[in-house]
Image (cartoon, rainbow over all chains, first blue to last red; front, side):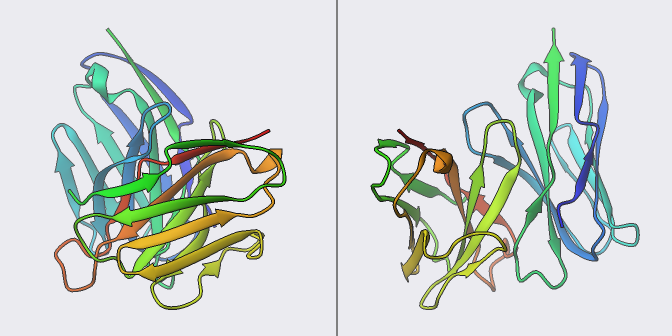
Length: 111
Length: 119
């Protein structure tokens, strides 16, 4: 089953923060976050594994609550380069590495 | 990060013809690769899992006779769209899973994608 992402879209001014949520109905082993620019393939941001960890990549960080089967991506002090569509990909515990992707969250950062 | 290439990057073909898309992992051996399809402004939909040396496993609703997958070596998987029709026009993306026993096991590295247009 496809994970549910929210919000569908968000518009930010440069320097503002945003949170993107991803929730699944299945027990998760991993959550993967990607950013995709128009016409390009997704670019890997980070992976969170079972264990409730939090990770960061520049000013983008993420958390994973395995009990709630949820992950959140935090965009801090957003930059223009953060614009794109963010996808979470979830790996269920019985999925043998397969990922199911959410519908995506379109982020637009304006000057 | 690991590099995955796809060829061709785009292809235009006539309805009824077959198209082959190659996915290569350039700097690691990938026993498992995945094929996704993405329609405009939509999410990535997993089509199939490609395992080296064995038959691919297809997701529900994906016709295995139409989308032929061959994973003949540890660095190459191919997707052949047979008898392509306009509704097969899409962005096809492969990913390669980092090998077990490596630090980045569980990560998937995506190729740049192939845009298929069927006239």
